[in-house]
Amino acid sequence: MSRKFIPAREAIAGWQKNPEFVAAYDALEEEFALAEALIKARAEADLTQEQVAERMGTTQAVIARLESGRSMPSTRTLKRFAEATGTRLTIAFDKSPARAARMPR
Image (cartoon, rainbow, N blue to C red; front, side):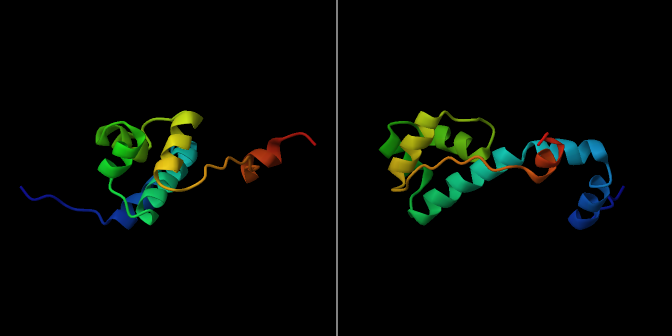
């Protein structure tokens, strides 16, 4: 029996037609953005996960979990990560275009 493989672009195009998929994907946007920012800070500092963990006094597994986006770290943890990577933690509130349209003025 042979398997039929669907190119990723086709699969994604199909999923994007499903409103439930789109809503679930959009709900993860902040987590993806945080994970991306953590990975970028570490990469720009030219550090391994192990090196960041050592500087933070934790384990490489903790850093991997932070960068996976599977957990929402505290601001204290984010500040320690920033210090370990030689960066500065900044937090901002931006209006979401979809949410801003629904907000009363």
